[in-house]
Length: 171
Image (cartoon, rainbow, N blue to C red; front, top):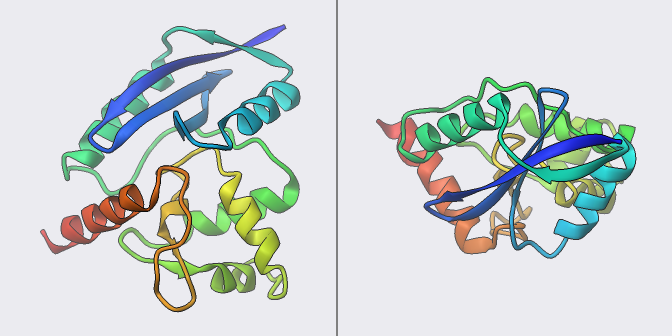
């Protein structure tokens, strides 16, 4: 059986679990999120791999780039990503990558962006299933009224990430 190499990484806003498969990052998720086991099972099943704690070059590069991001030194990430999910989930995650740094969008706007304007709940579900937090910026999704809505790392972390990006744009 193949392996998903993983390690934990402490950020200023909580602990992440980083996972690599075949020299690509397949996991960058908040360690204590409620859906963690579900996401882990999806990765194991679709990649036909077991989790093994260890080190990898792509995880090391991810740690370096996340550190730069949290230190207000990076706006974009240059990492080989391996999102694991359904074709619909992939369409949502690709749309998330189109939201500009420091910008936000609503679930409704995201649904329109993928050509499925009535699929707001399905888009929200796919957003919540994102296993590549920060890198695939699901934290940039807000409510239609501009309010902060659910985030795997917690709403306080979501606000801090949005504030970080806003502040970095102002530099």
